[in-house]
Length: 111
Length: 114
View 1: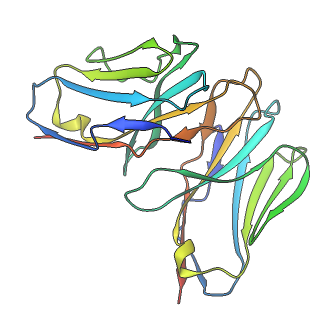
View 2: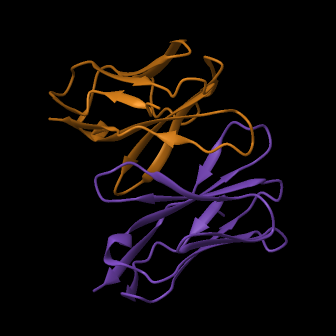
């Protein structure tokens, strides 16, 4: 089992729809959870982080965390073609050093 | 504030040559990470440092790869001798070593070994 698992996609949604990206992790001691966006040919860019169970909203983005289910998700409301990218889920445990990245989900938003 | 700075942005060289990639982390960050990304294997962690000390180099694929961090503001990743299968994008990232601090990535070095 991979430490951080994501559906590779591609996930295709129409413009204006809600895109839902999911991630599961294996280490119950994980404490910090991050979502990165990576455009083709570019470096990963941090877009959201969440530490506590529940929802965290930032503009069109909402991160959701359920530690009991070891599940974290990212919702993108009113999806735009410019949201088309690969989204990487990243998990950080105790010790504060290493972050484990998922393989990423490719998202296509169709105009 | 300046982000993570990597050089060169692109490197094309012939098989067998030595390649040196450079990274300047964000000032104040005490953890530094080297990654390799390819279409087939995704983002792979090669090695990471904390307070200039290598903590885990288990991701370094072969002895041909080596990394150093002589001070808090500079790190190198060296491949000697290089091979075509080393062609990839190499990212450097830095962070604070506190559990709630994210990594920030440089723009990467696109390496092509002919």
